Amino acid sequence: MLALAIIILVGTPAAYLLATRRFRGRAVAITLIELPLVLPPAVAGVGLLVALGPDGILGGLVSDLGIGLVFETAGVVVALTFVASPFYVRQAQSAFEALDPAWLEASRTLGASPARAFATVAVPVAVPGLVTGAALAWGRALGEFGATLVFAGSFQGITQTAPLAIVQLFGSDLDGALALSAVLVAFSAALLATVKLTARGRGFGLVVD
Amino acid sequence: MLSIDRVSKQLGEFELELTLEVPPEGCIALVGPSGSGKTSLLRSVAGLSKPDSGRVECGGEVWSDSANGTFVPPEERRCGYLFQDYALFPHLSAWQNVAYSLRGPKAERHRTAIELLGRFGLEARADARPRTLSGGERQRVALARALAVEPSVLLLDEPLSALDASTRGRATRELSATIEAAGVPTLLVTHDYEEAATLAEEIGVIGEGRIVQRGTAGELAASPGSAFVADLVGSVVLLGRAEAAGDAGTPVALEGGPTVWSTDACEPGDVALSVHPWEILIEPPGSEAAGSARNRVAARVVSVTRLGNRVRIGLDAGQPLAAEVTPKAVDELGLAPGREVLAVWKASATRIVEGIPVRGFAPKKASTDTEGVHE
Image (spheres, rainbow over the protein chains, first blue to last red):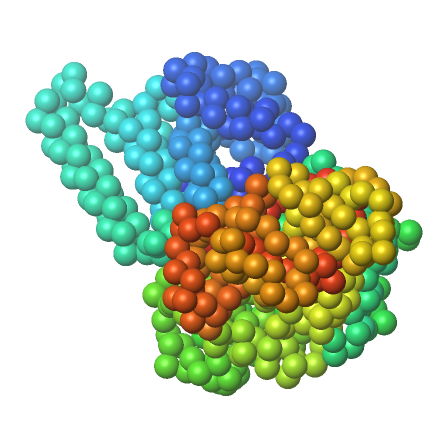
């Protein structure tokens, strides 16, 4: 949940800028954001460890701030954010690109600052796309396995995510693993259904009729 | 007073460069084909794009000046901007669209919005979403929204082009009354000369980013300065070669056709002629010259289009030609596509407008088609 909040808070404005502005380095930024999509999760975990781990490039800075990441809950949040964010940002970016630029310009001529145009026009109109993106990111985060295991480990109650628990149970308690899997299946299905319904309910006829 | 002083902007293949003053309660229309820089000019005035150079001033307030880097952002300019496809916010109802620029308690904003919608007879549609509104209703909601900012200037981009013919008449009258009631400088851009002539006191013809000719609708129609202007005001443009002028006027050998006469004088060479369609009469083939009209050209009827109480006859005389006649004449002469006729007009109705047709010269209809109506 925390990871999702971070993704949405940071990802929405980032996606908006990527969709509406043309700046130098834009292509590079997009590639960097999409990188976790093609990275094997274990590699992502190793990468995070190298970057943010105790002996990592930025590790000194992180521990100076008094934040422990590796083998801590905060580490799970970092790993999930890293792996799931591209799903949201990509979806949000295409939702913003589908907006008629005239809506944003109309908003400006009607006295709105760029930030107000973003908050009162761009986001509300793009909501169906944003919800879909958030659901995809959440789904990805729920199923996250490799990066979390490598970066944060699997300690019950601290860094153990549902899939990690399933794998652990699988070796000893098959019924428990099945039960937990069933919960995840039900949860994922409910999530998907909610998204579909919300998207339909909030559609504004963006496809010009 | 809105003053646009040498505002320039590079636009693909050409540069927009314009100087224009719109009087405090005046309405000026800029007419030109799509891609001539009309919308870019409105955007520069509204602050939606930054001109490369020049100065925009409204009511004594400098909005942008390249000389000292002044640039007032659009939200501080209070422009009543009517967008080409109206750009209503799809997630807001009609009244919320109108109330978008208003501040204060919701009840008060609602009251003001309803009052504005009421001016356009739309109170009943206040809660409707834009996609459920008709084209004419959308246009009026957009106008109400633009007026809600208590604009210091009205900028209208093709205000009527997205409407179908049946709603246009009423919308035109309403818009005309709205412009007058607003009492602020109004700049209107359109590709439709008739629209400009009905709504504005003065018209500037714009081609490739520059004003080619300015005047009232009557002045432009009476003496178009170029083939480009003549074509835009709906005149027939014929190309030919002028020969040495004599007492009887100037003979012009039409391309792919006979020689016609003009009472205008000009140097021998390639010329463009302009004739108003309502000055061209149609007679049966082989009829004898009866009146004083000296130009008699054999032509074939290509199209017959009814325009109100007039009928426009498209003709092929080696070059395209058009005549406007009464429905009665159509019946009497049996005018239908394929019929051979004589097109007849006076030498004094034949104006020599220029030597070579201007660059970018395009038939009026082509420009109408590319100016998309997204319905």
